[in-house]
Image (spheres, rainbow, N blue to C red):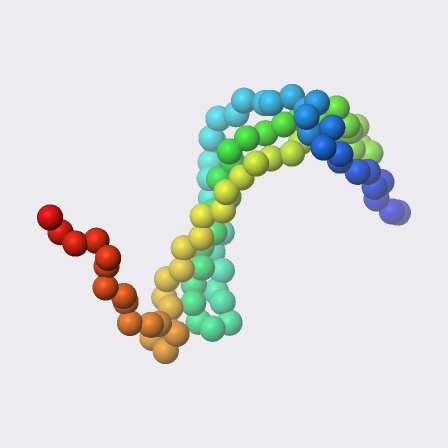
Length: 91
């Protein structure tokens, strides 16, 4: 069965209701890249709006504003570059 398609317009976003939230859990997703590097990614929620539109199952549609935090480690030596000298000088 096909999914119901709908469009979200700028007006839908303007008319959406800001919803307060509290952080309950934030997880890091960890990935092993083909070049040997390990990468961790975490989504940080900044804002939530509930639109006046509904999915086919009757649930309201939410949109979010978020930032992604990305960290890499275990980078293979051959991929690294010599660290650059800091432009900040001690006082």
